[in-house]
Length: 446
Image (cartoon, rainbow, N blue to C red; front, top):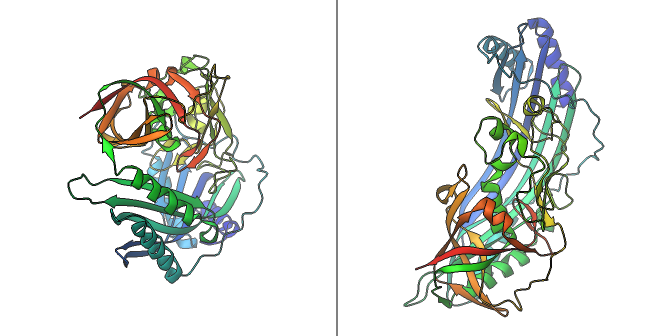
């Protein structure tokens, strides 16, 4: 992608030529390589270089038009500005999006050095070796049907006609391994693991292999579980996947659209156990792909969502912040319309717990490792969920895999039924979180 200063200069020249006074442009480019393997052979090798910019233009009547393009030379930008200007006369007249009031605030960020990309042949060799090691770990493991190793460089920028100009770069590498067993007279069992880092050289592939194999082997000897109410321990990834499924709780756009479990007046209301605190913290040190600004150029930041069980803030774009008399939080995405989404969750203990709980001493608790079918089993506007899961029943540190079962409940009741938040946090695809203990959840066995 062209230099951001060149794009800004070209855009301003085209805007003057077209008589456009107010516009903004956000864009990104990504250069990625990903591989998948199957039984010792490369299954898929994919390289892509994707780029695109979104152009918004406001006319004299202050209605807005939007278009997108992959062409950022003088001709492409001029055509995009002209198209967006023409579209602006058909734009919405109520709650028209505007520039973020924080788009020109200086950001104290250091230039990010990209990790050098590794040749594709090495990427394939690394994943083949990982697959081989997982299969060799136990005779019952017959394959790793879902796997992937990828590396990616991303550059993004935002600029507007009032002088805002931001750009940043970062690199990312990740691996996932999901193995499957086959044993005579037994059901196939499976488990997976995931790791992420700034570059392939730093990626903890060995740790991913070890976690995937240990989990898979632990599921080989399974038993049915009796239906009933149990104390349930959610793994960090399981809790965050469920938490994310109900993110409308904090999404200001969802709240304004009346598509949320919250209302504008819920700030200050106790919605969870005092033991729970949650932030949306894009700049958390563990977030290897942290972005310093959102699609509107607003600086990202730490936003406290739940503090000792109390709802403290919502996530905002510039538009929702204006309508709710708040500040933008750096959670906006620009597309055909401006949307709001969480960046990176940080879950941690709030008020001190009455007693420390541990899987090594607890009796008859369910440890849920992975929730499935969230697209079908979550009713986000009703607050209810019923989800199949992978996990174990744990008695004084002894884990016995559960044949098949579902966990069901009401999410707001779940938040209030938290009885312990462990201290040690783990990095997951959705954020940083410790194990979460919840009392009295309904488990249905076969």
